[in-house]
Length: 130
Image 1: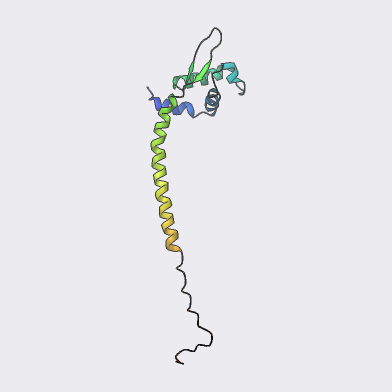
Image 2: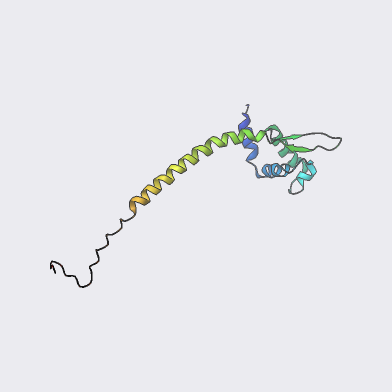
């Protein structure tokens, strides 16, 4: 079964260890050994996470003698960002409409200001002309 690129990226990003690896790689290229340091897992387990990220196109790995540096592929995240942007715009528009509706409800519920009685002048009596 062939998976589309976007699904592969989201599947790779679903794992917190892989997201942590990407966060580390965002700081710069590094070796598998350095990537494995903060995790309590074997080197083969870290390598498996790296293979998932590499198949999703989120990282690239090179070879320099015995050193196999890994680096993030930031342009690969652009496809994810474009997909998310459509929903970000949709939800922002919906939230704006909700805010407008709530403001209308609040305005309709506020009591109208009471009329102030007209103050009478001291000494003046009603109905009498002087």
